[in-house]
Image 1: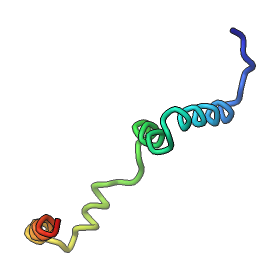
Image 2: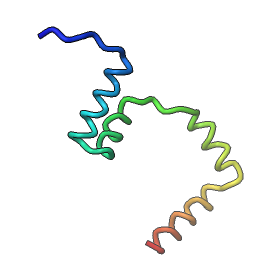
Image 3: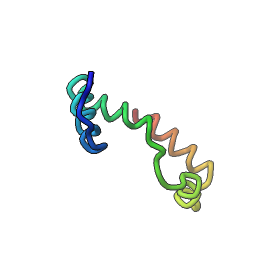
Length: 69
């Protein structure tokens, strides 16, 4: 089978259309997510986010949220 060469952009568009058609938007997004590396530095962000919070405060917050659920 001989097919016309396509650009990577055209191949990407065709592949996405096929995935959307067969899997739906949500499952296509889930499928594609497994191939991304993400971004940022979670360790650094976590340290900044919880810099002024003690472990006891975090544990208390978890307990409160579980009681509400």
